[in-house]
Image (cartoon, rainbow, N blue to C red; front, side, top):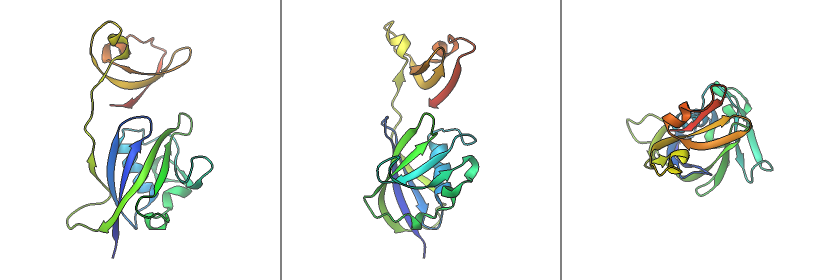
Length: 176
């Protein structure tokens, strides 16, 4: 009988987390796709990977390509060799390397009438305020964006400040 693995996925540099439940016979590719979806990552670009141990020197389960290809995408959850309390490292986009910890909270029985994988819970979104408007004493709700002008920037910007960036700025939304 299948079991459900309950993971807490936490963005390392931010206070965002999700509790994800996935069946033991599903794959890291399935988990990767749900992480991309729930954290609003591009699902059609950038490699990702899961590691056991310290990042970069750790055991890699293999790269995962967008759309589910790659060696790591075929690894079944029950073949990870993890027990309750163990942590994996998830790296999305090897260029900017968005890093998350993936902690196994428990292994439990399947709940009837539940489709897996699923997001079981998530923390409440906290409002972030525009970095540029704060300098003017305004508290305007913003989203995190990364962009290139002459160098790389990562800031919280409101829609007005994003629109004030030069047309040739390469803008990438990180998180809503």
